Structure formats: structure tokens, C-alpha cells
Length: 453
Image (cartoon, rainbow, N blue to C red; front, side, top):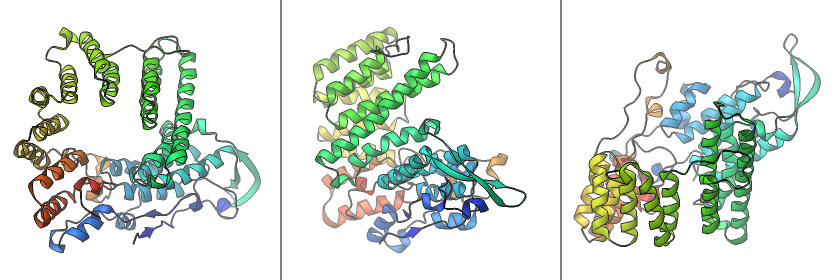
């Protein structure tokens, strides 16, 4: 049974309290967020009390500490998304309704936390409320001397004034609802409509950036930032189109970015080995090895010494060999990259996959187990005045990567299923669960452990 927790505290201006006018910092802007956690549920189901490590409690965090805006980044680094959802709400309701921009910064954290927790519907509802406020927000001007209200005024804060991150999340959310783990009810036409809504919103953001780029001079310091944003949106748009299985249009979007068609930005975006690699891997993932191979060759030709001993070129060759079923040759290429980059656990994982497809279960299990047990976590930040604020240590931790990788854990459990059966298999997975439970953040996908919850 999911438990809920709402923060009822927070100081708001008397003028807002006494009116029914909507405001960005009012409690009725927020949905209740489930405080249950799949990792906790799995531990109660599969581990004994003595083997359950203590995990951060979001409710205790707010009972013991009043967060400020500058404290929210630590929660992001610790992947403490439940706590962030509550803390950002607390920050927003304690922000004066006249400090609209500061409140919107709090909303960036709030919506981000809901997305990371997989609560896409809740995020959609709350963003919808912000949208309605953006069209016409009626507030009361406060008289600080008498705490009385004067004549109401109307303030307009259109979506184009929102923080960029919030606008991008607004574009993503419909597609996430359609493709997320709770998307069973959004099949067929509904799914298509939701993804198309995300595509339309992403297109609108790209057009906005094109207009900004057209107004900037060639030496403007903002040009690099806008181009970076545009590139990120192009990749987002291509992924949305791939969700619709529209491979030709997804490829066209990226090609148009390289040579913009009808773009208001008069300078063409430079062709790079990385862009060609993205195109190549889309072709390869959808079985078009011929064009994928051509693009990989073009990318290699652009690299220094035509890609000799270059990790990007080596990785491209390895992925192509794997797609061709040449697992032994692909493994040798991945191994080269790991030799150059010992902490690149993604390439080490690919080595293990090659071993698995060659029937070398022991080799695959050994590689993945080493990755999951090697200490790769970033140490907690120490020193500095900013770290002397009272803070739950568990909430400010910075997570490692290999130990908490859902892909690695999924592959590890897949290997276990080939090694064990029945009780030994469940025990081995439960042992791994108790090992990672204290370091994985909220929103961790327990399905990667292949346990029935």
C-alpha cells in the first residue's frame, strides 16, 4: 500500500492566503507524491531484517531540516528524488508569490524529481497548472505596512519566460507517459497522440532557438549555448520519432541539423565524427548495416590518422562487428578501449556480452561481477563553508556509476539465471539487492534485478 506525505508547512503572504487567486506557491498547485519505494518493497519481500541496510527517509529529512534552494543540488547528486520532490515543494511554498522567477527555479527541481521517479502523470498535471497560470495569473499586491491588500493586478508569465530546463521537460512529458513503465493504457492511437504532442513541443523549441540564433552576431558569446541546446533538442526529437518507428524522419532530423534546411541560422552546423556516429548507430540498430558501415568509414576518415588507435573509431568498429554476429572480433575491439579507459564500464559490459554470446558464461559473469564490486563511487564532498549546513549525510552522497548501473545488474542477473535455478537463484539476486540497496537512489528500476515484486 503506497504511503503519502504532504508538506503542509510553509509561509505565504497574507494577501494570497486571504484570496482565492491562483499563485505559483500555493499548496493546491501540488499533487501528493507516493513515498513508497520499489527497493524498500523488494527488501521486505526478499531479505531478512538483519540484511536490510538503512536507506534515507525523505520524511525524516524534512522533519529535521528546512531546505533552501541551494540545498537541492545535493539531493540531485544523491539521486534522492523522493526527498527532492518534498524539499522543492517546501522551498516553493516558502518563496514569496512576487518572486516568480525564483519560484520557477524551484519548479524545475520539482518536475525533474517527478520525472526521475517515473510519476509522469503527476508531472503532467502540475505542469498543466503552471501553464494555466502562465496565461493569466491574478495576484494581489501586498501592502507591507498594513498587511492589507490593494486593488488586484494581473501578471502575465508566458511559457517562453520559463527556465529552459522546465520548457524541455514540458516537451518530454507526453512522450514519457506514452513510453514509460506505466504506459499499458496508452497503446495505439493514444500513444501516437502523446508522442506527437512531444514532437510538436520539441519542434516549437527548436524554432525558438533558430529565431534567437538568427538575431545573434557571428561573435556572440550566446551562440555556443544556443547551438548546444539545439543539438540536444535534435537528439530528443530523433528519439521521439524512433519511438514511432519513423526511422527515415529521425535520420532526416539529424541530417538537417548538419545541413539545416530552411534554418534561420545562416551558418551550417559542422559535420563531426560524433554526429556521423549517431547516424551510423541508428542505421545499425535498425538492421541497415550497409549504410551504417559507410557512415562509420566517413567518421573514421575525419578523425586524426583516419581513426588509428582512436577510441571512437574502435567502438564504431566493435558495434558493427557485434551487429554482424562476429562476437570474438568485437570483443577484441571493446577490450582495446577498456585498456585505454580502465573505468569505462560500458565497454567492459560489452566485452561481457560478447563472452556470453560465445558461450563463455564464466567469463561474462566474472567481468560483470568485478564491475559491480569495484569501488567506483565519487567520494562525498568535504570541507568548504557550503558543506557545513546541517544535512543528512545519506542525502548528500554522490552516487557511483558501475555499482548502480541498471544495465549491468540486469546482465548480471541474466547470467545468474543461466547458472542457477530455484532457491539458489533467488538467494543470489537477494544478496545483490542487499548489497546495492544502500547506494542506489530513488527511482531505481528493481526490474533490472529480475525479481518479481
